[in-house]
Length: 338
Image 1 (tube, rainbow, N blue to C red):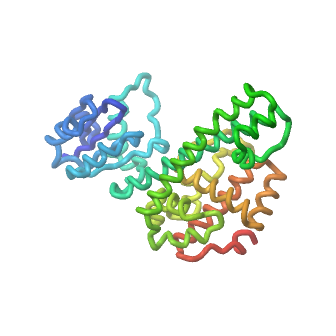
Image 2 (cartoon, rainbow, N blue to C red):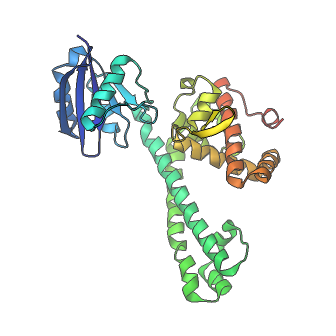
Image 3 (cartoon, rainbow, N blue to C red):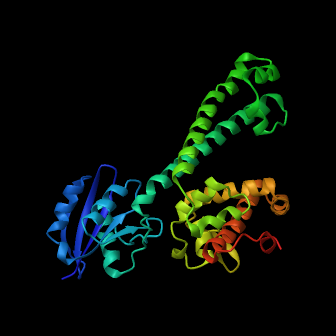
C-alpha cells in the first residue's frame, strides 16, 4: 500500500498527516519543530511512503534538508500556486496537512524548486544585500521628500546624499527642521558600509558559472547583479520558455480579461521577488547609462509613469537575459530595441 505525507509547517510547530491510496488518514499528529520528532512519525511508514509534501514557508530549510538527508522523497509545495480546497465549512492546520498529502496522491501538487543546499549561503547573502539596498533607498527618498516639502526646491536624491549636515542646515535655516533630515544620514551611511562589506565577501567567494558568464553583457547587469540573477535562477533549464521565465521574474501582467474587458487580477505574487527586484535594478542602470534603453524608457514614461516604464524595460531585459543564458549568446541590443 502506497502512502502520502503532507506537512503543514509553522514557526514553532508543524502538523503531519499521512494518507493511503484511498485518501484515508493513516496517521496524523501535531509536533514541535524538531526534526527527530517528525522523523519518528515517518519512520514506521518509510517503506510505503511515496513522498513528503512540505509547505514552502519562511523556515523550510531545516525540515526539507533533514528529510532529504534521511532518505525521504521531498516535494516542496508552491504555496502561491496550490489550489485551495472548496466546500469546507471549517478548516485548520490538520486539514491543510491532509490537503497537501491529497494533492500529492493525485499527482497535481504544484511544486517549488528545492535550491541546492550548498549554494544557499551565498544566495541568502545576496538577498540580505538587496534588503539593505532597499532600506538605503527608503532612507534617501525620505530625506529627499522632507527637503522638498520644506523648501520647494527640486534636488536630485543622489546630490542630497552627498551634502553634509551643515549644508542641509544652511539650506533650511532651522536646526530643528534640519535634524529631521540629517538624523537619517548616519543610519544610511552605516547601511552603505554594510552593503560594501557584503559585496566584498560575495565577490571574493562567488564565481559566475560558465553558463551565466554572458549575463554581464546585458545592459545594466554588473558583477553583483549578475551573481544575484544566477543564484536566484539556479538552473535556466527549469524554465521551458521565455514566457515562463518572465512570469517567474514577476514581469508580466496579471490581468484577467473577459470579452476584452478587465475582470480582475491574478496572483501577482506568484514568482520570485528577488529576481523582480534585480531586473528592476538592471533596468534602472540600463536607462541611466545606455542611450537606446533611455529612449525606450522615456517613451514609455511619457505614456504612463516612471514605475511602469521601468517595469516595461525590466521585462524586455529579463526576456533578453533568458536567451543569453539558455542559448549562450552575448546580449544583442539592436535586436532588443529594433
